[in-house]
Image (cartoon, rainbow, N blue to C red; front, side, top):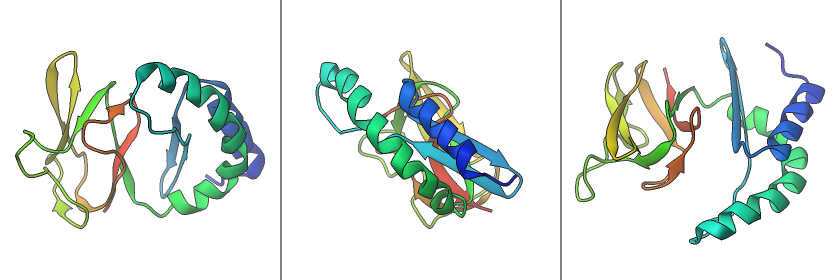
Length: 151
């Protein structure tokens, strides 16, 4: 798959015009992820209003450069559901994985809490953890990249 600039611009427009925060595509050895930069706020009403204005202006300008940076990140571990990301089984426990750690297929790498249920997320492939993309306690969406693992 060879991503052209027009195709990426269309994806960026879709991202800017909708409530989506991320679009990820993968084909064999190439992957591209387009993300909105959402402001960090502590109040829910502000979150609902802020993304509509700022990301639409920023997303098209930044997105053509994003694929080059994202392509070399390894395979993405994505959230299978909407919920809250937790890096450890308990607040005082060690994280399931850390950057630089090697994992095997089937290892639990995090928890996504949905509707008061703690869902252990297992990796479908083994390798070295390159990046953890979300912070502990952060809300995540279906399909959102949680971390990248290099096979």
